[in-house]
Length: 325
Image (cartoon, one colour):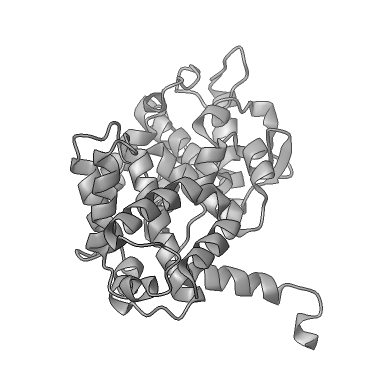
């Protein structure tokens, strides 16, 4: 298959990644010293390794095509996805590179670990590396911590109350992908403690039983202890002061840091949005419900192959008459 055809097919499926693919192709053409339409280019692709891709990123940073850590991280992710696409849709054989891209990212020889190490230590790139969504193991650890905050239902201590309120906020971010900005707007009247629903940006969302009970406990405690504010906001401190605009006011970054060594609230929100995407919700619905930007939603679109296989097969199995075929 012609390389140009592969690129065109990939960009039809992932049109938002054109900028990064164009930059990679310019570096590839520079090293190839020939036309990318040349049929023999596929032989070169069989010998590429992650160092070649890292060199392409370094070249693009040094030529000022990428000036921030976030855009450089996106480039690394997109090119990894591109070679995964080549692996799945062509007969171009490069097991070494495919294996590196597929490895768990915590392994020393993992593709993304090498790319991220360069990005984090590159003085030419501004800002911080954009946080990825939390994985399942970390989410389970957070949920365990969150439930522990409700073992004691009396929170005379302001710190314990703050932790319990943060636990509810974290759960809502993980479950609904709601941004901190939108979470702060939720009023006590948005929570229906009889039927276990929460209203978020016009959506009546059913709460899981455990979270519904925890919110009911919290709402009752706030009512009994006259924890009120003029806006009737749900997320407050022990004195009724609403959460501040900065996430640090909620205590969430501190609790995450102590629990996981990660302080980014974005990593929680990305997990929630990724779950909504896997459930089949459209970008437009997610944007309206969560308050997330298109850029943030797009940053949740890249999954591991095994995950995609499970998601797709689960959806196919849910189609009408599936078991009649």
